[in-house]
Image 1 (cartoon, rainbow over the protein chains, first blue to last red):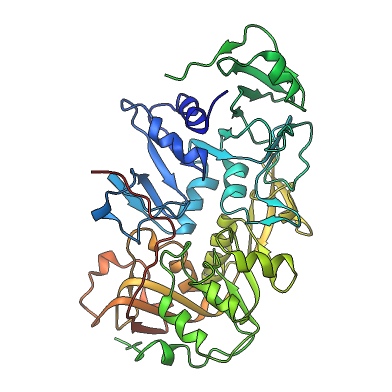
Image 2: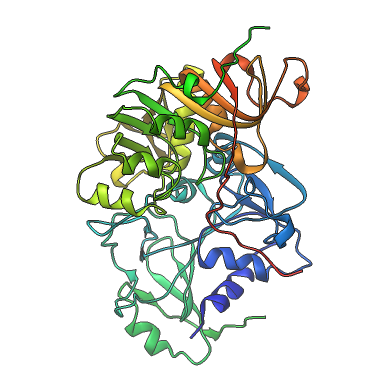
Length: 219
Length: 232
């Protein structure tokens, strides 16, 4: 079973040279720590920055420089700043190559729910609906089950959805799965020490196991 | 050059009445019109509709206007940092329209640019699409979204001149430029106000035509929501 850092580490292996990448709040933010040095990629922050750098040192903290999670950040060399309208033109216009975001639920046809629990939690969708509606390649980082043990990989989302048929790949604490165009979660890899049976029992949606399912490599 | 300067925040917001529709710039607490919000808090007005990406935090920014019950309706994309907001929303005391962030940005841009409506893919198949026209373009579905405009837009810039030209810094730009254009009366507060002619025209982000009033702000707190640092 993977911890959050390891989920981020595994997702980092999906990143390709030259990509512009949007990282959502939570586990996706951690992915930045594991991007191999030899890759030249640019991180997009929807509040108006291309070229997100690491957290600043104490003396370089600038309240006018934050990421979409409201954390203080730095800029890498060659960064660009812009307004929110331009930022979403990049997203909707299909200029961002890879989007990594968290989810509360994903359905077997690739629907995602991550913005609202009716009557309990209302945070808003932020930029997630724009991202999932337009991004070419969406990877979801999430726990396989909720805290109460309910599967989050479902036949159909029970929560209000954020976008339809948009998720390509899911990396959980138990597995790497691909959402097939015709529907279903195809099991690609299992976390170290996790059996296919366990993944099956914790996946409510249709799990497709065919061919060899390798154990994840983290480095 | 037309001089847009007013003395201070109090003078700038003097004629904002109850039930006005306001736009307030900022992302989180970054680039919010701190001085204008403070001046509004000292006015006896209510029933406001506030269009702003976020709703501040409990004890700063728009959050203070919510505590004082000045706001009837919020139009935002993300309000997760605000406990009082969530309470008023869940109890039904506050009317809320949550819209995707890119749709908020574009509706605001459209308002300032004289584009009454446009199609966007954001929210197709979700509750955001309820009651809206859906149309297919090149095999994909899009939602018709309308422009947003405000009676008053309150924006914050880094530098400005007496002609109303604005320059923003870092990620404090965010929604401010589109909101400046979408306000019938746009009030800009700046950290540094200089005479017209002193800013490089090549560097202007928001041209003065979009700004009706400008003043030199003071005592900026620029509160940080999540101070994250690394060693060395």
